[in-house]
Image 1: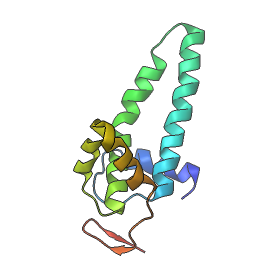
Image 2: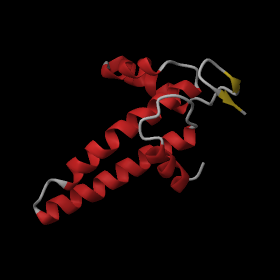
Image 3: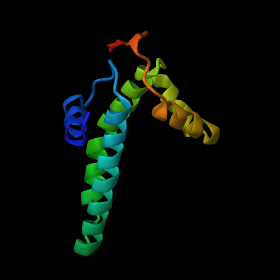
Length: 113
């Protein structure tokens, strides 16, 4: 999946917590959110408004969680494992699953070829 496709998929599957998301989809989405947040933070400081980045963060919160849950499904883990990221050690476990190769074929969540 390419950068533009990942962004489009992230917004079109805004609240879809079923199915799978490839590594590229997850990481391109993360890159997009990070870069856009940096640009909007700079604009906020330049304009003295401090509202653009906050609105963007709220607008991308749910699709960000959804793509992360679908990514966990891609490595055959429940989306509830995302809560493990609230602990210090859990952040490293989640990061490992996010960079892990996809499970090919059928798993508990969907089929991936």
